[in-house]
Image (cartoon, rainbow, N blue to C red):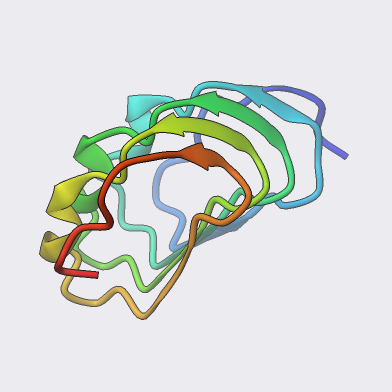
Length: 103
């Protein structure tokens, strides 16, 4: 268990799995411009919006799981820039609005 604020994964990681912890706070924009292929932050206590820089700066991202948090706002439209994205889970949040056509 890793309780506390989520400050982002260490630089250089390709995979970061931190589900089912008590990570809290917003998703820091430091997560952008990373070389992550897989990111799982599901089942935590993250809140706020999905950083709009995440989809456009994560060109290697294949799996993103942010499910079961308390994220709000809309799904960033620029997920179309995630050419490699194969698995996306945003379920059980407070997201609203239109699902981008690219998804």
